[in-house]
Length: 486
Ligand code: SF4
Ligand code: SF4
Image (cartoon, rainbow, N blue to C red):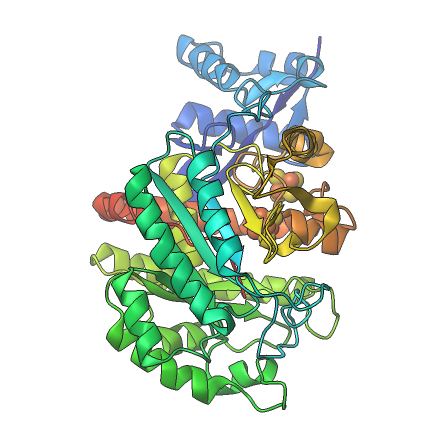
């Protein structure tokens, strides 16, 4: 008899209840005794391979329950592709994985990350953009190119009634006149085209003046300030060209920003490097300033002095888990703890994410360089290999199609059978290039970490669901933090 496998799930427990997260649909199944016994039985007697358990049904299942209830459970698992014959599963796509887009011609462009300048006034140790320049000569976006980018977005966003401009750099305030013009011009064009233009901006926070804050408030620009926690942690890696730390200046500006900007959320993002300060200390420090939420991202640059090793990553996870407990306590009492890593994950779990790509780069999301080139995303800015056209001649559809086809999760061998294939989908392409040497490879260095982090998220989700399900509906309405780190 053919061998069978139990796969496409993550099992977790909350109290005495056992659950399966069904990776293909994103559903969470509470297991009854029959199903829990079956899973335990297979896991005890089968052989594990990645996220799968392979077993011989003749040897095991025949010894088990033959009741109708039991057969019904087996059928349900088979329908969900949790239980299947090994031979049948080999080399085939799971029917629930979204395919690679066959036609990209009419794919609407919804978001542009605009590089206002490829220059920065800080010299952060971990900057992936080489002091903001992306390896290219210093360039400033002109008003003409900015206007053309707006036309490109209006013309290429199809039926979309809401589009987004992400104001990015280098440090975008180094090109303030153009930034201002871009926002005013696109708002005006949005009205003509019947589209709402939303704005978000990523800044190092050093150049925020009262007039600029007033402008951001007037146009409801969502702001993300890069800060690394307390003064000590921040000044360790984020300093001016002369070497002095930037914390004092950023702190002064942030106080003004939070006071003067109420029309859109103001968040912050922490880059986590080796020897990081206690995550809770950074979180509480930044939330006490009035930031709406704080996101933490391990540094991507493969520099051993900065990069987190496996031990550091485990410690980060342990600290995230502590904050998850705090998050639950707050959520049960209808309070929002602005730990955006958890909010974003809970949102994905609540909405039942089913994606075939690590992110939206190259789908409806492109970066625009100061001279109008269109790139896979902001991290690939100025890298010709990832140029997918320009704002004058449009998206190079054939190249886009080829790139999307090679980035699809089903092209990533180890992801094909991973239970997280529809929620992680191989991860960030830039990080894969840095850490795995090829942007098309899965982020294999963090698979275990991802499994553990998602499990923490699943437990958090169920605990909140049990006590305050409305909270999950409310956070589902919060705009997900975009992947735009500075
Ligand atoms: S990269 Fe993500 S989807 Fe791929 S195997 Fe690792 S955890 Fe799974
Ligand atoms: S996840 Fe990676 S590839 Fe995707 S937009 Fe962010 S930096 Fe770019």
